[in-house]
Length: 83
Image (cartoon, rainbow, N blue to C red):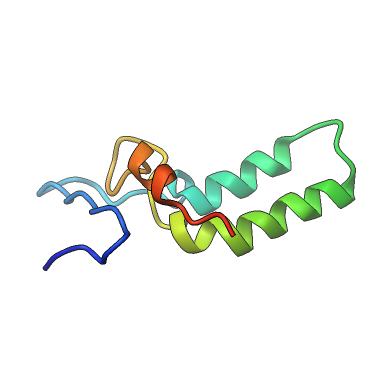
């Protein structure tokens, strides 16, 4: 089956490869990163979280930030419709 038009193709899970932990998914990683930021107001933290939820997770949410599974790549970033 061909990848959706405009969406990068995703990799394959190798036989015997352990399931990707949630902590390696972009959605979990991005929220954890915002939670660790210091010297920002709660208003800014809320805005960052809202932006991630509304604009980034729909596109990158299940992709991996590690070398396992369907990895987030430069191609994903370059094809991301920011808007």
